[in-house]
Image (cartoon, rainbow, N blue to C red; front, top):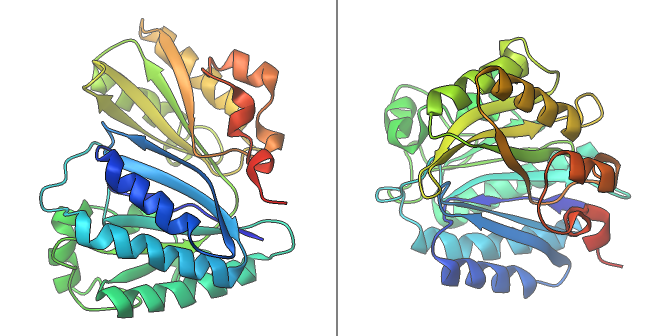
Length: 294
């Protein structure tokens, strides 16, 4: 079994997202486990699992719905993005290996590029070169800078030498399980969220295996520290939360709550952790293993 967690650059039109969900559910060999949307990010995250042939069909079905509908020329959202289907990671679960996921990422990347005339960049374990492993490096400048970067020699692994006019490009790859974890702060000051993100992310000398950035949530008049915990055994959800809370407190700002985007492995989240990080709702609904088929 392999997990796939595509991120789609649409978080406001719920009828479209429901159509995406129906398209994935209709594919034999793939099970939709979860999906959620954020209007400020203008982004949605789908989680499904299955065997490699089922996931390949499900991804194509997702692109079939998204590519004609999502136009990045008019898309607005606070989350960085390169494409309508922005990133598609494959993650090994029970009975599969990273090599299986790398092979699948490359097959899917080539198929998507050919079918949709879309540039596809490979990342993480599937990357074609060391400097292409990092998603943030590939996505630097976003859709708006992509045409100029490609014209200057930043060519995709598959597909045309220029972006799709409305759908941009996609980043497809293979990686380990991670936890997408956000902490909301009781302030509108983006500089505070940015400073906290710099303090805690590994690339700035902070916590191991933590990627972080500050984002405004204008619809709620607050800001957010948005994180990816790429190895929750080295830096746990609770440790990341406590670091944000400590940095926020030093700046006179309170933490409101946290959220987990998509699903988290059972080893990363329990009742005590959920209470400590102020996670609303039923924490058990966020456990990956509870959603897996059969």
